[in-house]
Amino acid sequence: MKVEKIIDVENLVKKYGKLTAVDDLSFHVNKRDIFAFLGPNGAGKTTTIKMLTTLLKPTSGSMKVNGLNPTKDQFKVRKSFGIVFQDPSLDNELSAYENMYFHSLLYGIDKKGRKEKIEKLLDFVGLLDRKDSYVKTFSGGMKRRLEIARGLIHHPKILFLDEPTIGLDPQTRNHIWNYIKELNKKEGMTVFFTTHNMDEAERYANHVAIIDYGKILFRGTPDKIKKHAKAKTIEDAFLNLTGHTIRKEAGGAIDRVRAMAKSWGNR
Image 1 (cartoon, rainbow, N blue to C red):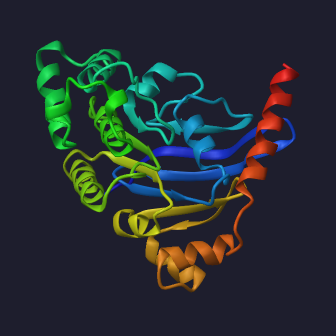
Image 2 (cartoon, rainbow, N blue to C red; image 1 turned 90 degrees about the vertical axis):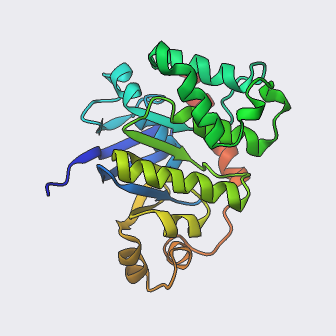
């Protein structure tokens, strides 16, 4: 059986002034993969996802998503993926159903089956009884569940999940992952996710890439990575490859903002 690439990245670079957030990145993801993209805070994970999903333009390099160029074929690329962002992206002044409804309009979901599809997904994430409640009344975990349901509304070929299970209890997390695995198996949906829960990566991913300082340190199957890092678990492999030192995340974030502001000021 021929293996086809659904994401293909070559020499991708993203700079903000003098700061290089993504540094000559090359990797690919095959169709039907559940691909874990792991790295410390500030490693370049979210920046890479934003480029792949048309939200940022790269400084240089090339990328293909479902055979299309995200910088040139934005609309077509967007139709092929669903995304759950790391940061909240719901409209708090709308109900759960209204958030789903407007998202379905954006993706041209057939009017005839729209209501049934929305209610089925709301039921799946345990929010059907709150479909008419304003999102601003939801807990953080409830909002996360709604974002996941919204990302699946159009049955995407690729599902991007940036820290998808933050704030979810173990029962909900397992329920959602079981559903995603079922979609991956039955519909061939490719999953590209980031997480700081290394057990989650080890349990669900069939391929893993570890990124730090904007570069891929190693990629392969979980077993291959553990063997390479001489580790018993993905978490141990991650620490062996990226180091055990606590990162100065706050300072790094400040430097990043300053570099971005300077870059934008020079436009």
